[in-house]
Length: 241
Image (cartoon, rainbow, N blue to C red; front, top):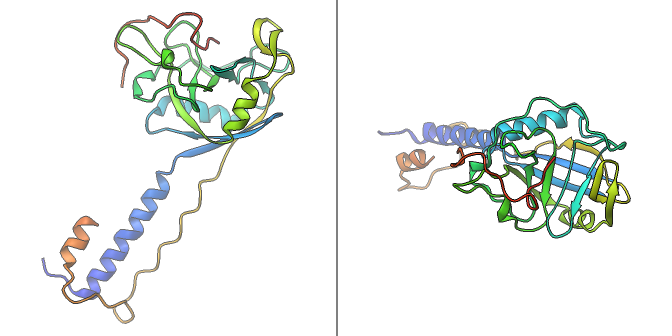
């Protein structure tokens, strides 16, 4: 295929502009979790956990998490919250969703997952942040795991601060509840980082000359369900609701 150099310059410019737009559109969604002990930012991995991400972001957009608690805190394990109000009563929720623990994302330090009860598909609004690598929460052929759908990208020191809060009994919880309430003041969706505007395609009259010998054709051409049954980890390891 023979290309006029001016036409090729326009074509390449158009391709680069489209690639820039596609990259911007695919940028991961991020939320800021603001608490009375500080804030941290979570990158939501919709590409790996689409159902769980959509569920979580739906509650975020509703303002559901405003003034809920991190009601369960275990040092060197995790912090959990999002579904309990300041009166320590569970808030009404929507329907639980299917478990996406088989998406390949591991429960590593700093990752965010969907809490659930003993049933594998019982997760709805509560989430947890891993303070350590917690392989016991990952799926195995003989058990369901806990679905990771995001990771902390800023403010992990705040998560660590929350995780060492003195705990005990509070409300209906017999243990592991912060004695001084840790309040989720709000969770807000952050605007995507603005992508740099692509340079306008050069017109034939004012385009940058393409060096002799450039191969124009080459420029243009380059231009999960967990196995097993409903078995769950030992009661001491999962983040129950």
